[in-house]
Image (tube, rainbow, N blue to C red):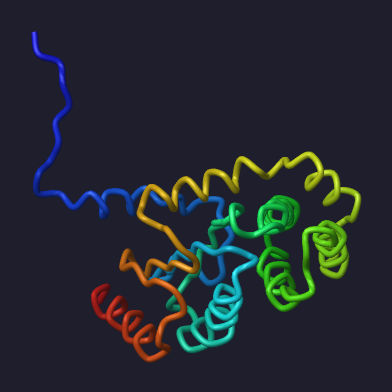
Length: 198
């Protein structure tokens, strides 16, 4: 009797991991059936991530309207950033309360990143939520109970599994792009991904 597992020696293990990225019930921008999917792992306290968010929202989504969807993943680097975990929990709370408010909420966090600190992050998250029509008490209850922490942890673990080590890290139809890229190169990667789907 032999008991064991069979491993393929020709299969790219990273490709297999990428197939396991959760796409359902995740914050997104753009049509779910878009030919190009950009999955972004991001830390709310990371200045480069703030620039990347603005680039995706105001450049990529406009240039490739209808052709690209962006799926947002929390990747809080809590060992070096003191308020990112609270922000990520609030972010996912907002998604659970009103998915349509997630991207505007995230944008507010990034736009006000420099004025945020560990002492005021909770109050700021509640204020941003109110500005977007989210019930303050409901959001406070979610943040304080850390009800969305399992979603944040799942996103972080997923990123680690596929090789994310720093933020921002994007995958354009599976191709890894690290940091804030050269804009022309990023556009070329999206164009190449569109051509490959034709």
